[in-house]
Length: 471
Image (spheres, rainbow, N blue to C red):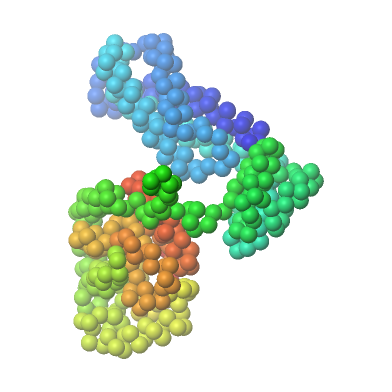
């Protein structure tokens, strides 16, 4: 761990302390606002000295909760939006603790306005304080080179080269590659360390023996060098350790979506889809009217897809293509439409692998172009979720002709229900190659949690209201 990282992590504590105190004082200062705008008369006068004493007792509670929530964990790089969400949740927990304390000790004070405004201001002030600290730290990292981690890569294959490319293209990560070597020679490692210095090693070479890896780990431990490795597929799997008649056995768990996990996800799907159908019903009615007014044909396009365990089911979507180009049994010109679609796939598909994506599809209507760009065409799939053949979150369902082009290992995507949205969609949407999408979806399958589903749903909101390239 670099000294600059230790310094900035340590200074976060007094900065957070100061921001919460400032938020508390600000909340006290604006306590007359409800009275000024004639919302509610002020019921009593609270001396600032008494309030400040209470504030100084309360602030350490928030700092303690921040620490418990991992907001002072020493990390070289952090995702700011994740940190901001943690600040929000930790501050909310702190406010609950304070409300309970006030309820038990009524002689403090019971100003709901001060409590609520202090909560909102604390979240805002702490986030701003941490944002400023991060900007200063990144500035020093880039301009002065302070806190940069010197990385040595071991291996020579596509995975290690991808890591190399990521580090070189993202200087804000705080890493600098000082060398790359093949094999696990400790002697060679010593030479590089003496000449250039090494803070971390990233290993991705399956040919290195267990003995060589053991020597590398020992050397790194003795010389305070972080040792990291890119795992094989088996090493990334979830495992469960058991004993059979005295013999240690490790079982590879394919997904947590089994047993209670499956029940919990289904309950979440039913409740969420029901609420979302009610919330979006005015928008869905409006889209249906616009689709009908612009072109003839069915408003809802029913498309056959492959779902859980390879079973076929019908996906509902708002039709965004002109009716004569829809691949549907209801379309009397379906054969011509399918022939034209295959021609477009050959000429304009921008995706690699079994999936296709037609760039600048000429078959779209004006309304269809808009709703497809913002993923509003997929709103009827809430009914698929309610019926049980889809989930809110999961791998996207593909057509039979696409699934037929799967390699055998791709069929892992079919072990859970497909979703309206998924980790791959909020990570890159249609710009991802199929293999990248597959790896992201497999990670989701192996690491599912209800909290992960909730996070993906929130990120999907940003994607829906964002801009999607017109493909």
